[in-house]
Amino acid sequence: MLSKNFFRFTNISCNRKYQQIFSCHVSTTSKVNGNTNDLKTEQKEKVISKDELFSFIVRCMMKVGTRPSHAEVLADNLSMADYRGHYSHGLNRLDMYVNDIRNGTTAKDGNPIILKESPGTALVDGQNLLGPYVGKYCMNVAMEKAKKMGIGLVAVRRSNHFGIAGYYSLKAVDKDLIGWAFTNTSPLVVPTRSKSQSLGTNPIAFAAPAEDGDSFVLDMATSTVALGKVEISQRRGEEIPNTWGVDAQGIPVTKPQEVRGLLALGGPEESSGYKGYGLAMMVEILCGILSGSHFGPWIRSWKTSTTEANLGQCFIAIDPNAFEEEFEGRLQKLINYCRALPPSESGKPVLIAGDPERAHMAKCDKLGGIPYPVSQISFIHDLARTLKVDIPNIE
Image 1 (cartoon, rainbow, N blue to C red):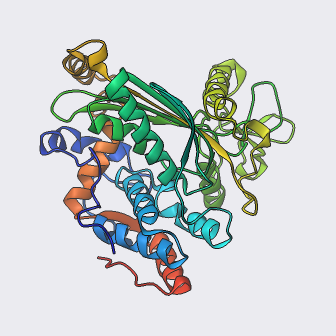
Image 2 (cartoon, rainbow, N blue to C red):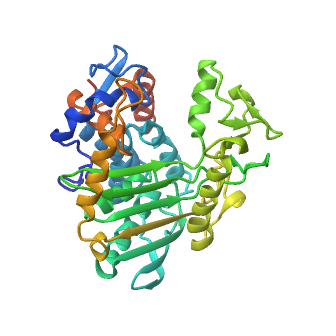
């Protein structure tokens, strides 16, 4: 039985105050639509309410034996991803989690264990549980420590894919804290001057509270693009920028079918790709080396699903009041200043990290749910048929 009112997107409902401000940015946010300036869905799109989507994900995960409370956290994470416009990490990933539970690669029940702790730190064993459940547990521990000590840092080993990193940093913002979240991933990125996939896309999420529900929310990979963008270009028969990936010899390519590794954020060395490489290493140190998990090239490949992932993650919470008591007001002043800057191109106002997501949420709120293309709706029907669960109401 689902806990009453469990489903609520923490700190991400688009306040009415900001809907008008950000509605003009919708065209910059959607990962699904080719044209989203008009808030009407395209003819081939369907809308699923957030509640329906949440319940469908829970049904699917419980069908394969996942503990209800674990399934609910996963559903909250995946639903938030799509609501915020990060379609690559929402419903699109559901079958991966289903298969990992079915295959026994991920544990369906249990709780993380604290192996070692101090007043401001903790080392956690995730017990090979679903990544979002492990991540939420760890961020809660970090936030508790931050409230007492001013800062809390938790590193975890034996975790799994934890969805969008911003899910956890926003948990901190919801408690008026600054939040960081990092994870290492399967090796897809080629270090600068190399031709071997040795590091993951290793995302970084940082979120800080401002005034009246506003915030700065950075959620980014340390690679130039996600692998999914290369795959989409290949399906469409399109070429890609030569800053995205390299061939087997480490040479930048424009044909997606020739990509054998992703470039770090910044692209080739000439355009500062070594900076993205350095950031990816930083995340690997915080997540893999510090926690005792697998790291770098010793993490299982993306296509492997028969062995435990043993991913490492790191969560940091900071209480701004332990430093500057006017933190939120000062941050809001900077945010307002940047948004008000004259744009270099008419019709494209200056944005703050988190604004594109706010625009997408405003769009979803106007539509009464999250829009999906027909291909994604077909996926829902196929998965429901396979698992013998009810499909969500689709408009």
